[in-house]
Image (cartoon, rainbow, N blue to C red; front, side, top):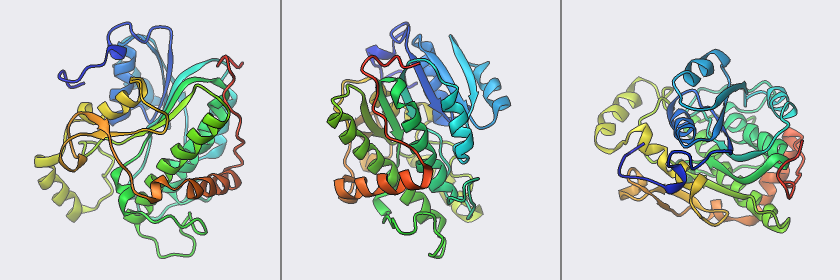
Length: 302
């Protein structure tokens, strides 16, 4: 983590006795997030699609860690992960994601980016909510600013597929999910909070599917605007540990929110639309079969 950024909640030992689940924790921002929490004393669960890669990543981390298989592009895998859970979770970090991929489908027939980035996390969060005590942080993106959400065709079955638009739509869905989740938590008088964060222009392998031309452009421009994975993870870590209101959206404080230290950032009117958020929740429930169950007051559901 950038040594100029520090939170008392991430000091050595500050997270002792707490459990943090991080999806996509075997590389990139997820691995940095997992390492930071483990160094702070938390028991960290690496929820990863490739168990062997997860084990290799776990061997590089300090403290108490475990690896559990989770494929967000397969609702059966999400159910297996959640059904096997029988203890408290303090923080859930919905970090895993795919970006700008060619048109592909999940095991359940969803467009891959919507299925992984939103629907998989939607099902996972709902399944784990009874065990949660503190907060859910979902990693979004300022790509949401270019998005329009088509609730009648979330999975690009009727529209000509555009990979960038599909990614942007999935990131808008992340913010709307956070908005509606926080509304439901507040209505249930739950202390659990839902927040979102974006890393700015972080140097990760998320955009490996851009293609040769755009990859070359990104590499050239990236030298001037991108920040490290460690810096890119800061907004997520801040959202996960700072005393922030539920529904907050964190991102870098620099020009264009490309780099810098965490601050509260804005979102588009569409990403702030409570009616659209409720409608997306309804559609997501219908697609995934997820059932809303608010966290238990004690957070110790077995």
